[in-house]
Length: 354
Ligand code: PEP
Ligand code: MN
Image 1 (cartoon, protein in one colour):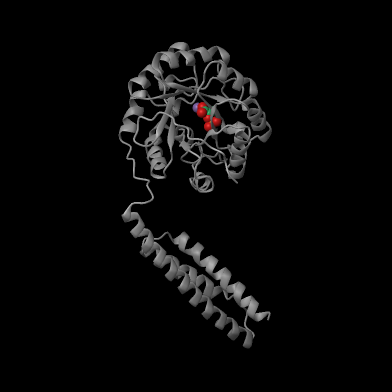
Image 2 (image 1 turned 45 degrees about the vertical axis):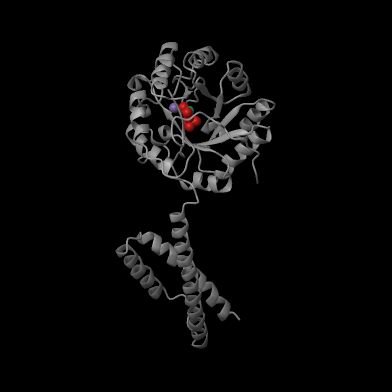
């Protein structure tokens, strides 16, 4: 499965990542322009603001819709920033493009619905839009990829993904669980696809934004989309997760951009060491399996059962404790030994049933 992509070429004030910033919602003409000017003053090049707001329950602020689009267009005219907004219907696409919105993003609730995504894809056909697709609310990588394929299939080549975390019934530290393994797997499957992290919707809390931004950079994400408001506490939506442009600037100034180039000599050497150790690990496992097969022969001859639970528990406990002494998580070791044990049992079964 391949996507047909061209680079986004978004302006970036950072060494490596581009940053999209702006309020959750476009509330008033003044709030939009004040926030945008403060962000532009801090060197930000891409402005976000929601014009159509998907709300969990009716009664909240659902966005001004079309009347707010000229406010974004003015931001572009006065500050030179690119402008971005969420689209959820073909009408949104048509209006956003009409007012010169540069980047359209598909929200998490929309990505979860293939009918809605296909309608958006059809509406985007023949345009030169840049589109970012948020992950669906549920942790379903295939659904996320499906949405990207539909939009790419409509000829949209300036395409990227936004990781905004996954909702869960049980509320934990984060508003939406990051489940980093999912965007990492997306990157593995579609290496050319740019991925942007949205620490605001992952965390739901402004005090967690800085560490999430750093984590995203450490994982090689291509950009960040952060909610920033001139008066966060009085925001009409998502107040607790927005930061002032000043705070955002501070967060960005502290980010460490590590080298992601694959070819540094040091990295090559270390990877070679890992490869050698992996070879040894497989050799050892094969030797271990050979002994397991001998045990299988013995059990067969003496009519014993294959799984002897006391011995199995002893291995898990002993190796779990040993692992933790050596700085490896006990659960991780137990999981590894569960898999090894499963394969030993399978091999012994083969012998016994021969
Ligand atoms: C937003 O970006 O303001 C938004 C509604 O995001 P999500 O679709 O990730 O909930
Ligand atoms: Mn929001």
